Length: 153
Image 1: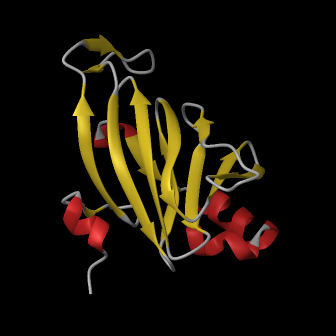
Image 2 (image 1 turned 60 degrees about the vertical axis):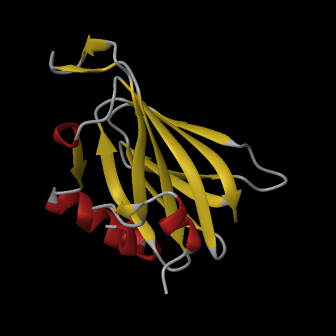
């Protein structure tokens, strides 16, 4: 059975896991400071993770802001220069937003039945600016140093 939010917001599967729908793409365009390509100034999506789903480690070339909307708190992991940390958003003791700086790997999972969040990227998101962990040495480091996190690779 499909989760009601998938139908309500017409969400589709995301390559990293979960479901999404882009709900905004700015009409104003800017040049990316990282590769000079033209992108919308900002984009925004709804992103839904259901119990048992993970958002696999990936990175975006531009800053991304996560906002919690409803459901269980979200565990958001960041990986940068062999430093791994967790931030939770959406719980009573947690923040409602988290910033992932450009180029950092990130992964996430719901702490309950589901978490509905929003993700804004500036300059705007393009799949050409998105990548998973491909380096064998980085995958090996996660497997050895953080074996509980390997399921996010």
